[in-house]
Length: 260
Ligand code: NAD
Image (cartoon, rainbow, N blue to C red; front, side, top):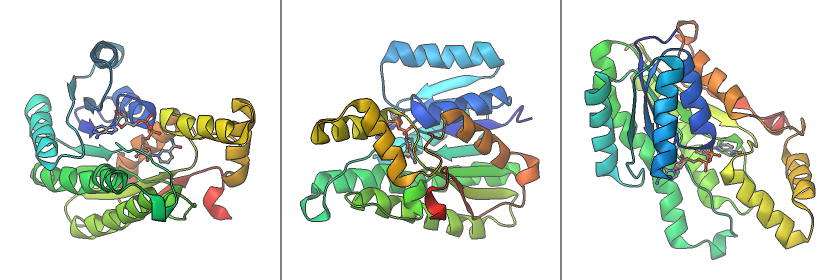
């Protein structure tokens, strides 16, 4: 059980982050939510988790592309929950384009949100974790942290970087009761991927259903999406005592994508 553990999950108003926040709360952890979205919907999520699982919940809308807002988010989490034991670095965005046409502002935003934000949460959170002598850092990388796809230069660079950062932090915390691991999902049907499916249907003049099958068939041999619930269970396991000696690794949940 994660009862009494205090967790920050970035980008947890939607998709994978929300699935992980739910799973951690179900295991008993108090949760600081973060991410963009409709204020009333976020309040419903926050109050719902607290009611359903009897845990403390908070929310902060820090923009994960802004280092000073990230520092404030971590400080607010420590103050609101009374400490910080678990950080799940999940916030992320996507943009696809050939590298020579890749908009510079999109490159900068993807590197900031998908990579640098994890550096900032980790450096801000480590003192609180070391104080408690226990910590779990889970970085949501991607199959694209291990292999590449065309038209995703910024995303692939950021996610490979995140897997590298994971290894370094694991080495630096190896004797502190803290672990740092990456999770590498394949396709998960979230708004981030729905956009890519819709664009594919439009560009190729095919139905959304066909575009979904084509997208899966191209990369993911199991031809099924990984779900936020499944990823939540993996994150909970990485936070368990059984996983105390798992550190510095990248765990795939990708229907065979990176086995090829
Ligand atoms: P999503 O769009 O459903 O959720 C992204 C979350 O990040 C939202 O809560 C959003 O508000 C938040 N966010 C975006 N920009 C932010 C910012 N600047 N500051 C704070 N919060 C911000 O996407 P998702 O598919 O759930 O993606 C979550 C993570 O999983 C991302 O890091 C993504 O790269 C990774 N991932 C997704 C897939 C997939 O197939 N969906 C596969 C592998 C990895």
